[in-house]
Length: 466
Image (cartoon, rainbow, N blue to C red):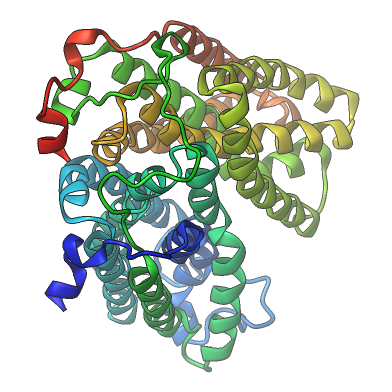
């Protein structure tokens, strides 16, 4: 097995189609994208004891009481599971980025499957023994490391297979992460219904089953993926020569990239774009209910629509960046996003739910597009030899944004309500702050220039690094 997973045994032979690599990446990203659907577990996790003691309604038909029994976990505490997973996603991507580059996609995708699915199994154990720290360890820490390694494992390989269309290639894979919730949420709900008994709401059995099913699909990706042979290039491909257009045909390794201003400007670009988007993504249902008084069912439909645009925006914007350029694409994100965030409170005061929904669908498409475009932006600036490791380091911005975005939304809303602001108006200040963050992001993006000559690999060092 170790030999099969080795990079040298995954080199593509003659006749291998590069178009098989995006589906291999999707096998990984559609599974780990379940993280975006973890919220479907929150309510059942908060009812474990009351379900066991017949103290809350049947979860199959419930609009149930939350934490009706002393000792049940609170929604606030359960919120840390997802936050931990995102934090460890960024940290593991940064720590293991060099290793992923060295061992290749097959070994790293296999490791991601073990960690993410193993984390689900450990979390299932924590649920069954009602031990929240074990759930934190399983899904948040172990599963979070699987998220990080799995997220970056196909990126460098896709860029090597598609030097002519890096945005399209990485956008296709990262689209899977955004769309994982569309599979994960209904699957989890269906399994919890199936496994529900008079004394259990089926959460542990659901996590166990999902861990096994996801592992099988991720291994399919492991078997499909290949790396191109040395010197391979698609027919008719001409390497770029114009560094003035922020695209280089040379390479910068991770250690040197960390010394460049471009790395930190791109870190801020990703952090600010994600901070603005992730906060509203987590509160979209509550926001539309409080601003327009819609039902919970209608709000759930709105969240589902946002998930579709989150997913679609990843492939659309990343593909468009191949033609418009990465810098121009991010200019659109920040300028259009700033305008829309400023207008959202106005749409609320107008009572125009249609304009509100359209604004947030565009915003969330650009949120997803930012994730999918950043690997190609890194490849343009730093070359492809270490792009996976550099991408992993940049993803620490996601970890930071995963804390900052929800905190801004939640605490500013809480402060506004405590000050007597009506619920319908409690998000106005937050929207203006998010718009301000995007202005700062625009400035950071405009400041990006070509990497200085001294950071590039010289002579034969590029081959040694590869």
